Length: 253
Image 1 (cartoon, one colour):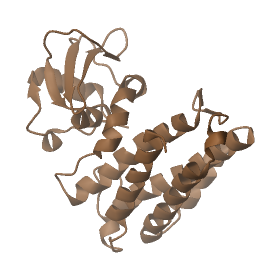
Image 2 (cartoon, rainbow, N blue to C red):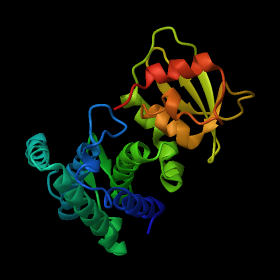
Image 3 (tube, one colour):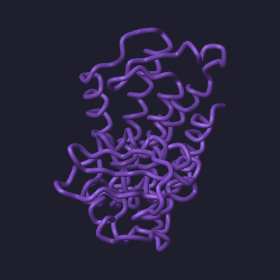
């Protein structure tokens, strides 16, 4: 398996291990997201697994990708499920998607291509998009059950290099904010975040000093709007004002 498909498998195993033991009352408890219960997050992951399966079909068959009307029908069906069913069905739907990706013969993977959210994706590209969503939303559930939970390290190792692209759609730039140099650990990266004219996150080399140093896992959560003060590790160091600027710039999605 490619590293991204292997990481997606591990993320699915973690998701199943977190939610499967939960009873009907527990799945109704709040997730990290104030507006979503644990079951709501699971439902979102389940419906998205079905949607990704449609894109997988399109890439395998050389067909047109699904349209927004197909998404709406899937979302409506999942929203109508009882909470416990949303969780159980989500585990099954996500397992089905990952197994299908794993099952594509090696000699057919190079030919896979699908138009997906504004770009042509190969199989690893599709799996990478799924991994980022799946791993972060799994954390949304895990941290509601264990305040010390983190995003899985095998996912972080891959997601961290997609952050420049993610930032362009996740950001809400603050006017006049000073550029920030961010150094991450595990894995080590250095980024420059600029706010004008549009917010941009760029990988850089040769920077003498960073304004902020933090684990890559924490920077992933920051860009995804999940690094509030209560969930910021003690290993984060540097300019507190720059950290506040970044939290404002990445409110979450």
